[in-house]
Length: 188
Figure (cartoon, helix red, strand yellow):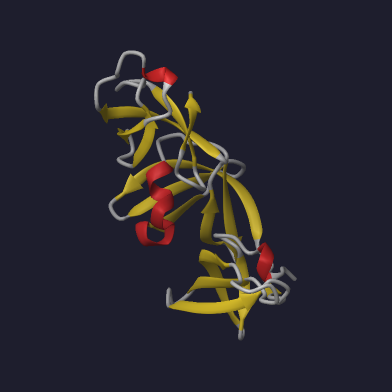
């Protein structure tokens, strides 16, 4: 039984007999000393895709769902769907772009280290690796001597997402991006 304080995006729970996956978790810190931290969570129903918003205190318990974690590899995009292949038995699973939400921007051909969350052989969601390496396709020109400053500039990566990178980086370089925060980590 997970506590509300342990919830993160992709956590699968049961609410009133239905299976939900956490899509967004927002932490509200108290403004007074005696207040308790609140967790506002947006869930998506696995079967009907209906959204549900709930607010919990940190020590509230939620019902856990039995699910299987399997290693998968991103294969390709097929129209609106993203196709993943099981690394062990080579079966394929498809997730729509709305199921992935902001995770789609980190997927590139052959990406390993992805974990699939399965309930009754149905793919509910994925867990991305901590970081991915992507190529910068478009950014402002590098500025000489910019490595001494902490300023950043916008860069468009090969998957289409935009991140802030240091001014000394140029198009064609590969960078590591944190998949949870969406921020630049280092050169790849």
